[in-house]
Image (tube, rainbow, N blue to C red):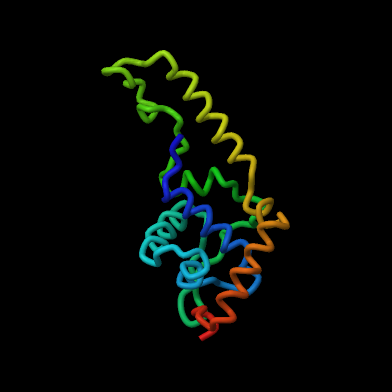
Length: 156
């Protein structure tokens, strides 16, 4: 099964945004530092997320990004879809040309698995993830670590 870095990072960044939105717009540099993701990569992802209607940008001093909807309304699957990522368990990318141009014996099994995974991720929202105690502890640790070092862009 494939879920590339693009999809993983998009979900991670969106969850970070959901966890830290209480303080207003979040700059990508802060997300990059907390999640250890390249700033240029985040810029590319957020351009897609903005086009997908999942985030809004705020320009000017104190600007950054906000979720375009409540965290409870944004599913993990929507985030993955917005960055043109797919969860695909097939070898052929769902094209049915797995075996020298033809469908292999297990193609339909892997397609069904992919559909189940997408359905599962569509049933999990950023709000649900943000409410989990273990995720709250991790987010708190990340904020303390970076706030203590004085390296968050919003703190400077």
